[in-house]
Image 1 (cartoon, rainbow, N blue to C red):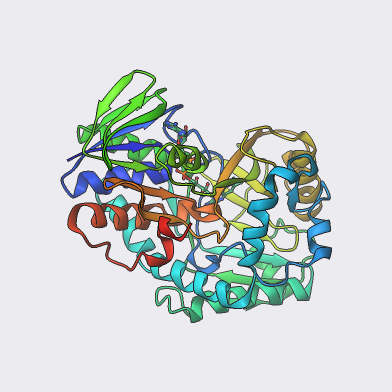
Image 2: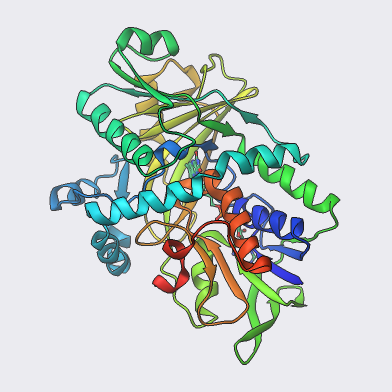
Length: 415
Ligand SMILES: Cc1cc2nc3c(=O)[nH]c(=O)nc-3n(C[C@H](O)[C@H](O)[C@H](O)COP(=O)(O)OP(=O)(O)OC[C@H]3O[C@@H](n4cnc5c(N)ncnc54)[C@H](O)[C@@H]3O)c2cc1C
């Protein structure tokens, strides 16, 4: 079975990996370079304990107005607002306790397999930087610590047996003992012991090499521009280098899966939740483990010989425009929180587009408008975490008729 996988980010790569493993012939097409999109400069956390939908109860007019402030962790660019309103109204309809609970349960079911799949990738010989050092969360404010504790408890209560009971609370002294680079204002901590992290660019490079070694056809710098269909079946992907005949297609183009789905008569309402990062090579000071700064919602990851600072969620449409003011705000906030001299000035700035649909759950499954087109996209802040389990589930569905878990909550048909 020749499967055209459109998009070579972490999701497309993992999908191709499991399709190959189950005996199919994936053809990977990426308009840029493998792993060069949102999968490039992120923090690389594999963090099932915090897997929740972005749509949470409590979205008030006040919090909405706060989002229009340029230094807010969740920022809506006023100029982009008119075009975003329909999407935001749908997003708002999911901001309630019942939908949040359903979303957490669905993500927990998928995450049940996250660690198993990651360990399997490593055991199968995929080369990537993979650390099991847990995650430390630090808060200045008791309310913020309580809100995060509640989220961790909700995710654990959703039945994710791998994670339940794997976290503990830290007082100020224990927190600063764990991470001496933290500045004194932080008073509350949560230690999540089983979380892991990868260097994302090593993961995508490792998957690309492993797929090539297994004979998978990979086309970089080749954009999918359309599809040839006979009745309700796609028979070829039209690309910038000509048509590629296929038996099936997977749309794994991140935020661009929305425009591709429209070519196939289905409207997946994907938008971009932009995030920014700064990567410092050979930092003067290094963190002991990944660190989440609560309240300001910034994540920091130590890698071999490097440190990455990442954060912010910006809704400003589908474009890769980097707003220097957002980077300046990230630097300012980190400098006040952690003793990392290069946070003030230095390192490589980056912006990436997290693919998000209004209920902020991934879309994994068949596209209802075609018999042989599937989607694997919309993984919001969780694409690195969920990529292996999503690829595994979709490949199982396509080739064996069973995904290994229920995919109803992730169906494309819900839109
Ligand atoms: C600052 C930041 C921090 C993050 N931290 C984490 C984290 O710690 N843990 C976590 O789990 N997740 C994290 N994420 C989220 C994660 O990065 C994303 O969910 C994930 O990378 C999405 O992967 P993807 O493959 O769907 O999209 P992408 O990586 O964007 O890949 C899509 C690919 O499709 C290609 N493409 C697009 N259109 C076409 C076309 N027409 N034809 C062919 N190819 C096409 C693009 O070139 C691109 O390579 C973070 C994101 C950001 C921005």
